[in-house]
Length: 192
Image (cartoon, rainbow, N blue to C red):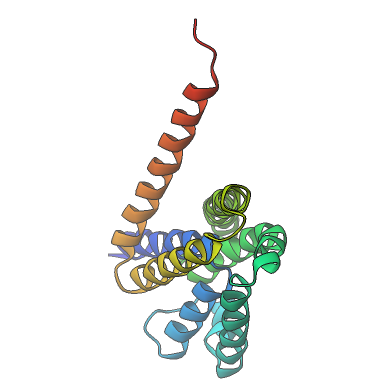
């Protein structure tokens, strides 16, 4: 049973890290709410995340971030600073949720799986926004922002309540990203 708890906590962390790749603060708010309501146990040193103060702070940051993506010039600026923030937040959600592992394993998983997942997804979301800005003069960016926020909400709640489903969604996202780049690479290669 203990091994299952560890695996579920890893799935939970990876799902939240993927959600962080779409919106940095929204998954942290959901994690804070889940910790506050004692829906999930937080790692010992991350108990503060389930406090009312953390919940309010994450709530304000989430609202500012979400509405910031609807301001034409601010959305691209947010993407510039969001990549390193997403990497840190992805690492943090993994550390906060992983249960019963040694610190070396916890931090290794957090940096590689959590930070890496968040960075990969945030980098691709930023590239999509730049492409949208270049091809539609930014008119499609609000639609893209809405889709990203919706995906972040679904991923964050799935991570908390159905971590296995969240992990499957992350694998699906990686598959879509891989297929996109494979198709893009084929278009760039000159015919032989």
